Structure formats: C-alpha cells, structure tokens
Image (cartoon, rainbow, N blue to C red):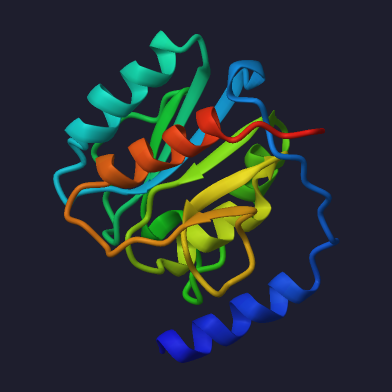
Length: 174
C-alpha cells in the first residue's frame, strides 16, 4: 500500500507549480511552520517545549503541525499547534480539502520539517504549505530547499539545532 501512496504522491507533486526560493536571513524570518512526527501520546515535549520556546525567544511566530498514525486525536486543535491524524487524510494519505485550504491561507517565511523518516501525510503538508523556504533532513523527494544530511535520531532536536545553526551562519547575497 505504501508504494501506491508514494506513486500517488509523486503524481500530485509533478502537478505543483515550480517554486522560486531565496535563502532567508534568519533574523528577518518572522513566521515559522514546524512539521514533525508526533508521539503516540501526543505529548511532544521536545517540540512543544524546547523547539517552540527557542523560536519564540528568537521573536518568531511559530505554528506547530504534527502527525500521528491513529484515528482519534486527543490534543486540542489550536491556531498555533495541531496534531493531525488519519481522519485528516483519506485512504491514500491525501489531506482533506479543508486541511489543504487552511494550509494555503497563510504564508510562512520558513518551514522546518523535523520528520526523521519519510511520512507521506507530512510530505503532502510540506508540499502544500506556502513557505518561502523549506528546510529539513536530506531526502530525494524534491520538496525541500535546504537539507541536512544526518542519520535519523529518536529526537528531532538535533536536526532542528543543525538547521538553525546553518540558517544563522550562511550569509546570502539575496
């Protein structure tokens, strides 16, 4: 089934318009969308506490969007934080139309994809989210503008720290 879902994803990805990207100056980034794999209990302490707090301390507007493969989501749906589940996607892991519309209503300066393994529902979120610059772990799916080559870890904090480090260090001529 995963091969079929991946095939369908690539079909939708090919239909997306080409993006133009500019490497952001970290101090000029105002809004950040963080995409992550939620734990089964939906507590996500590392993301909600450490990562969110660091971005807020850097004066960024932060929206967290997680995903867990289960039907009933117990966490509240908030404007700045939400955990998605199987009910937010159809049988082929394609997001429901309402979710796509809500993603495209707002544009972000930076999208940070903290997924450690390919998760098709989150790849759709990364693809449909309106962000000027998208960063995450190195993958061959062509969704990200900036990729960190690292081994998957149990904790997304290392990947986050690497992305932020390089965004702060690299000076763009844009």
